[in-house]
Length: 131
Image 1 (tube, rainbow, N blue to C red):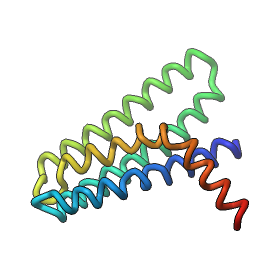
Image 2 (image 1 turned 90 degrees about the vertical axis):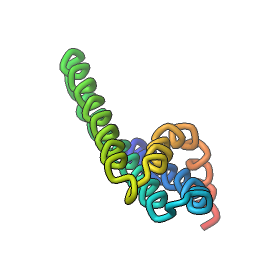
Image 3 (image 1 turned 30 degrees about the horizontal axis):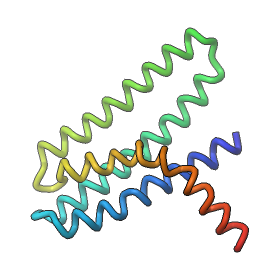
Image 4 (image 1 turned 120 degrees about the horizontal axis):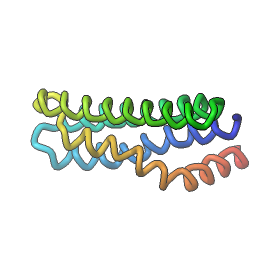
């Protein structure tokens, strides 16, 4: 369990590592800079919440019998998908405040942090050894 919490922290850090260059890039090229920045932040915080939701519900599913675990996993995956779609729809409705492209790029942090996690892990381990 301790290892899973460490990976959770590393993945959430990875979301914000991904979001920082995206935020800077959109801040330079977007016409409505505040909306683009708010979009990336909304997407990043949603991505971090989705990662935390995965952590909690996979832990719950591991304590269930296989059939109930499968049902619980499908239900929680639907909940995460619903939340992502809802955040994206809200950004499409209020695009002058929260830009949808920023939200999509922020939500991509869920995927990108899965690829980045080994590198974040090595970086954090190196910092702990030095410090």
